[in-house]
Length: 398
Image (tube, rainbow, N blue to C red; front, side):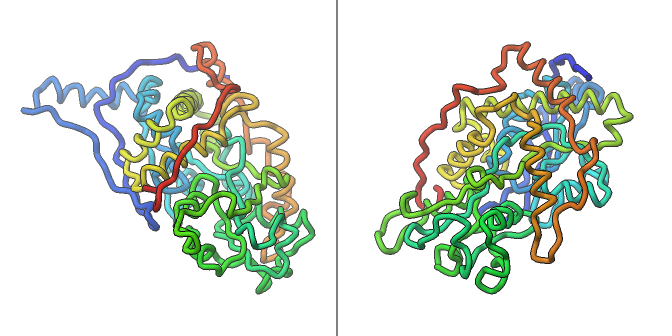
């Protein structure tokens, strides 16, 4: 187990972040490096020293710049990465970006992705390891209108059920299977391909739509109900939460290169440092979600102010309170995800994986080292007293 001492460093350059996106999630590119007037020799020397002082690290996100990743952006903004001797570049994702492919191709040092998606990649030969399970809870819902008569997945038979696909459908299908409903039982014999918004649901074309607690669910609540002239309210909706249904799978985790972990001591030390600083970013976002939302907005997200704050608040609920310390991979949750991955059948008749993943699929070695250092520094990595804030959504998320 590797422990890395806290090293105070100066950052003279921040990572450039290029973001492509759709549906009001588009972010912009930014370069926050400022050059001293006159280009003094002292400034030039400081810039030249930076690569020697800081270890360059890149992390590939699985989606666009938004408060889903407040831990990482807060850690960067608050200097937690630089205090660990790291010069971190956060690389936003997009629909056509597979984070694990970016990691295994050597174009990123770490990647953020959902566990069931990566289990399939591991079975196909990707040598990656879950080194920190940042989200302890699933944020996936299926949302219907309260007057639809839908109360659980058992009511889906004969109805139009939306799903994004791209590996996001597994909890939904597992929940249906647990309630005796097959894909053939649905209207049209399968799920409906849903866009990454709630437009089809609001229009009545989908009876129950897929939504994340921190994003699409809020999109409904910030939309005007034409029957009332007011924003939709939570009592006008029914949500099916896969955490409650027993088919939740682990979501946002930090993945590292297995081969580098096995042979590269510097990468091992960097992994502990990166996790440690990221957890500090999570704690910061928990304690001040408004500031975290502002940080993500400044990083390039174009989400509205109330929507961004809602997202930061909901993300905190997925992390805190933490059972074993933020990022620690709980064996029971890992085993549930693996079990569902072995049993859940997709529209093509295949399961996510066919055999148990290798021992290298996850490790608590580095996250536990990070947690030990943080606790020694007096950081509350459990958040047992965590209470979410109340967020008022505005029309369009503004």
